[in-house]
Image 1 (cartoon, helix red, strand yellow):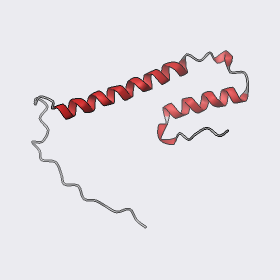
Image 2 (cartoon, rainbow, N blue to C red):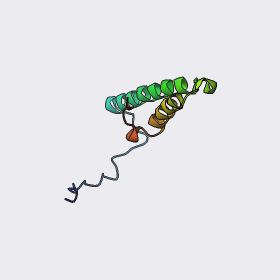
Image 3 (tube, one colour):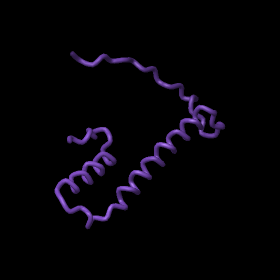
Length: 82
């Protein structure tokens, strides 16, 4: 079955004004985006702090690669198998 196409009207040329003061909703969205980025930075910092010499077994390396791949490709991350 082909995907349903939903027509989206074009935005008026004057809808975006780069000099207009940002509204509460737009600023709130930027704040939420910043919080999501901070979470990613924390996850990345934790992963980068891993001592590569501590990865002794294939299971250790596999867990590290799984975490790194999930950060780099979150859309493809799957739960680790037990």
